[in-house]
Length: 316
Image (cartoon, rainbow, N blue to C red; front, side, top):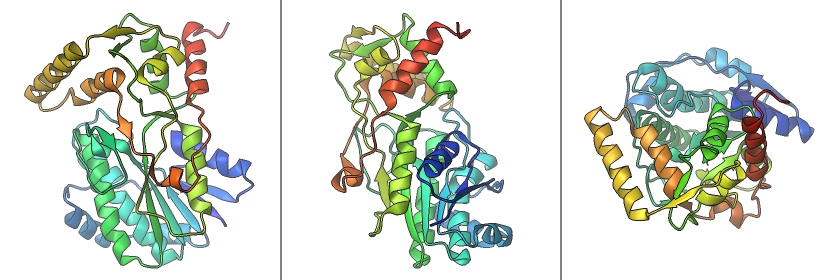
């Protein structure tokens, strides 16, 4: 099969291309079209997708069996805007329409577990609880894509909910390593809550498995857990986290969200990162585990590498 990766120059897209190359699969990258929209509901977004000119995208996709949409704006602290909605909410349905018309067999759309927000247990249902402009745009993208997929019967469509993806060279990974080595590194006692921290190469391995899978795919697949807790994440990144009273941490999180609400949610992303550091987030084992397709866990090595870079930023 031949693969086309939209957003192949990005952090996740480039990892997918590396995995495909290592597997000996013919794959090419394609820049995603830049879209903007003010539509902010699935039905309105689907109408916008239907009105979009997809002739050029259809021509670019023609001849490819599997299309991976790794494009979008990965900006968790972004505010609402037409560009954010265009990239994350409208583009998936536009790609589905073009891929179906071009004769592709499968579309793998990369979304984010952030669509389920602060839910205690991440899962693979259609339920979403977005808490920020970014997570809402990704949730709208999933919902609009589901409407589009229902019409495109010849196209197999699966949405991958990536968790907190880390990798070499990613600013968020470097920031995590710096945080782990700082006095702020801490966990809510006892510190054994599961953390959704994962690695980009494991995500790429999952995408490869989904594209190769011969049977039917579910509508959504959650990226599997890589085995770290809130404490072991910070330790792997070079830290020695303190255990804080859980009740105190919960009160601090509630206060943070209250302050953010007074600022129209502008601090939600920052408060959420602290909440995840302290409490993590659990998740179901999911479809990939049921099928025996759990990728190799690599995030511990990624964090160790980031810790080494943080300890010696000049590379000496």
